[in-house]
Length: 298
Image (cartoon, rainbow, N blue to C red; front, top):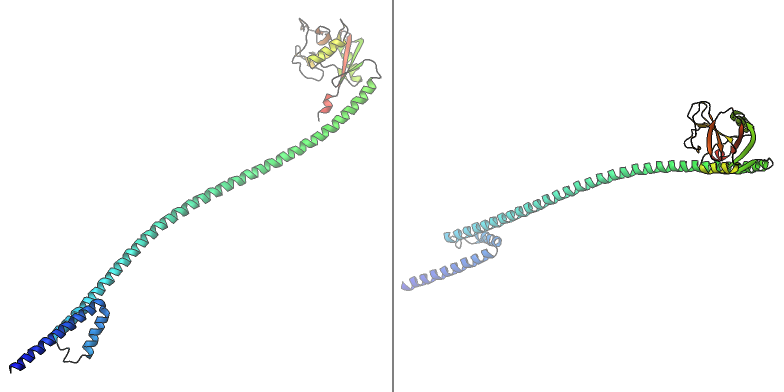
């Protein structure tokens, strides 16, 4: 009987050791791959003979291992979900910042585009204004060229007429040429009115003295003490001296103490010393002038 008891004890210890080894193997296998462990436990529970899976302790440990695996899987899934959410949130934040940056760039580009459009509009206006000015300048140039052609023609005509006049006047005694004008000094005696009539009948008029050079030319042409009528009078308004072309005298070459302003001294004489006002009805010589300067003006 003792031997039987001893054998039972030995058998029980052997079964316990085998069971512990099996449990350690299961634990190691579960820690390596929970999914395979769960499948193994399920398969063992399904196919193990009733006499080998009847232990409550083995079932409890298997259930615990499955729960642990499930918890680990849940933790892993939760961790993965958290990591994914953090990643998505980070990316979303980055995308939001990039979106703001892109919107700012779009706004800046829109402003630059509007500025360029405004500049383009202004440049277009300036171009149109320049084209208009160019057209006007072209028209003015053409007009000036036309005027220049006319002046050239008139100048040629004037030179021809002058040459013809010089030729004709050279045949008549008394005419002198000086600076585009011809002068005739007459030593006959007539009143101022009759002297002017004589000049107009010759296609001229009484002399108009425009400057100091012309005055010197007249003085040098006259003999000392010779008085001649010039085309200057204040017969219309006393004190307002005008030339025969109706232009007002601005500066003159009056002799000392002249004009006297006498009531009937309304016509001007010139002599070697200067001008003198005198009665228009008095008789003196005269100077006729025929000028072609006006023919140069279109």
